[in-house]
Image 1 (cartoon, rainbow, N blue to C red):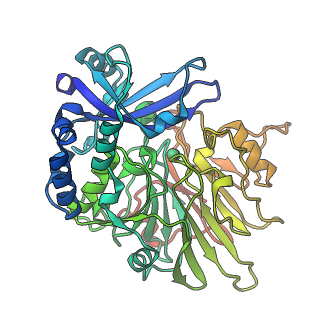
Image 2: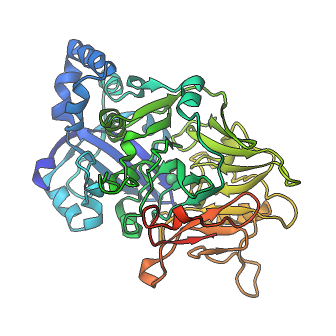
Image 3: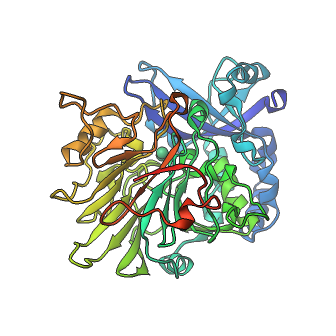
Length: 474
Ligand SMILES: [Zn+2]
Ligand SMILES: [Zn+2]
């Protein structure tokens, strides 16, 4: 795979994460500049291209073949970092030697999931030139090519119609996918009927990816994408449709509800793959809440967050339940990677909370980690952390576990101490985590949470057709 990736690339910053020691991991998505140049240089071709794309025609398929690489850069605490860089495009060169250097670190050059649509990855070693900002006209042309506006707008009516007929939720399952996020809502038979993100770990964190977990797509469940980061999108690459097994349907044939955000070339490939596969992609642009009734006094509330970066401006899902049989009304909150302070709707009572950003820092502005409080009393509540063992981001961070503990979410403490126990653990008290270390001989596990107590594990969920033989903690 080495040499043919040499060349000039246009690249956008995909994600940027500060680590506790002050270093910063930046990921760029890059596409072949040579392949795109004719489109960029000719306004006529660009407008023909846009017209054809909007009509669902061929150019998108050609663009899917444009060579791409994902590049990971680690900046030291002293290196300057310009937050505005996230909004622009760069040009850089990748040479054979750079790829050869990366190839000596297999996890860095592995094509993601073996799917032809997915870019290989290189680490920024000697053979990648310093990224240079491109001129405004080229930025404009690149933004016009890789624009989320080519896809259908998810008006509240369109989203409600696409999600109509979903059953009430009996439980939530968060899958162990390593340093990434994938959760599902399940009905009373234990069948997943809606996914929140389909994530997969990248780069060094590939090492903590489990054997591909089985994801049940039997009911063709819609997918709500919280935001356009690979650790929330790339999980579709491990599932291939099997005509012999009706549970293994192609996630690309589902409806995907996604947030309007600036996308990279690789995000664009995912969206086009969904369209080509016969799925549907609905882009939520409104800041207003979208409400979908599930029956039995339950509803979904989907809402864009109020922040500006990718983590902070995506979709958040709330599953709300009215008071029932003396139990108070309560909600499950899927915060994605969004800082709690940027949620536009915070339910009054949250009994299941997915910890924001896998328990990491929340955004570049250093906003405080301010989670919703645990419901008062000793009743059932669950705080869920999704991350892989020995994550390269050191998730979850002490700042996060302390902040959640401070809001009443009960973490396990070290023996004879008030310090929270390290979370390379299965959890304890209110807390469950997906992190289990294969190397330590611990079985992989998903976690399940319910409304008022530990959920049952109904037949479908435990069957080999659905999740197979993985442990489900609850
Ligand atoms: Zn993210
Ligand atoms: Zn994430």
